[in-house]
Amino acid sequence: MTPDFYDLLYNGYTGEYQLMSSLYRNGLDAVRPPADMGIDVISLNLKDQLENPDHAPETFFFQVKTAVTSIEKSDDHPGVLVTVTFKLKPSEVDLLCADSSRALICYVYNQQSDALTNAYESPFICFWIDGARLAAIREAALFQRPGDSKLTLACQLRRPAHEGGHWYAVIVDERGQQVPEGYLGTVDSENEITQASDGADHYSVRGYLDYARGKRGQTGRTPQAAPAAPREPLEPEGAFRA
Image (cartoon, rainbow, N blue to C red):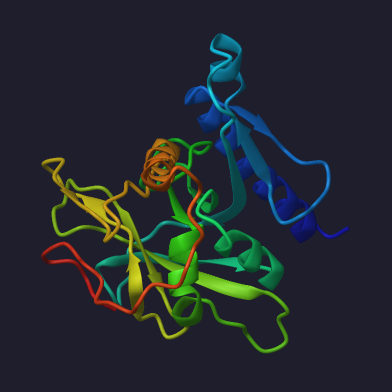
């Protein structure tokens, strides 16, 4: 095995166990399926069911992707820190897009421990895309490079207009252009949130759980994901456009 293989393997484990830790923090049990079926982590509400037998089972399914990069400012585009890419099998995308109880969780780690954060072991940024949103951006965002059997999802990590604001993620196409529904929201220096079009917090596992539970509660069941009509993405005032 090559060193690259081991690096990819261990980086992948890093993201999966990071997600499992966050799920436990939110009172859920987390399981890694023994077989590779396109789902890396499953969450179960065992604690709630044990405490109250009347609580219905609650299950969510996650595909986890991890990227490790150097977080640096770009001389060409001052608003963009870095572009990261994630590889997905077409079968994984099909599986995720089938339902909003399934989500893609992306972790980005900074390989320079003293660059923008001193926490080498902590994610520089985490964001999620649920099945419905992934289905909506699939045609515009996912692309296949020559000779590659997998699909590529590209994401720009951007710095907000306010110096003290939080970095945020934007899904872009192969040319680096933001795709419809590709803006995932951000938070400025005064903790004012500019939300994504779905109104969700895309930067925490709790944000996904709240959103998915809300969608499930609207219909009494897990909604089926369906491609959304193209629309202009919302962006915070002063945000950089590629």
